[in-house]
Image (cartoon, rainbow, N blue to C red; front, side):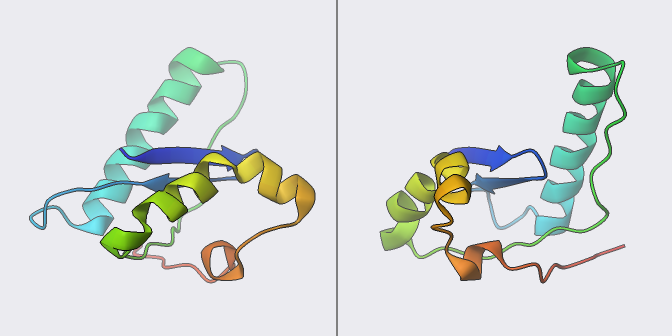
Length: 96
């Protein structure tokens, strides 16, 4: 995990993982483990469910610091409406 940040309705993560791990498997594991944590530990009294889809893209090594900074400042970007449209667009990939 290189960076994680979000707001109440979505989260961005920047990760580095081996080529032997697929994006779909990674997303499944993150969503499954975090759902379990939310419903059994963090907020068992509230309903939590991820949407069925996700978006993913690769990042050039030279841009890792820029993307990490953007992710860590999610709340500020949304308040100031200083979003990077390519990183926030609503087009999503649904493997299901």
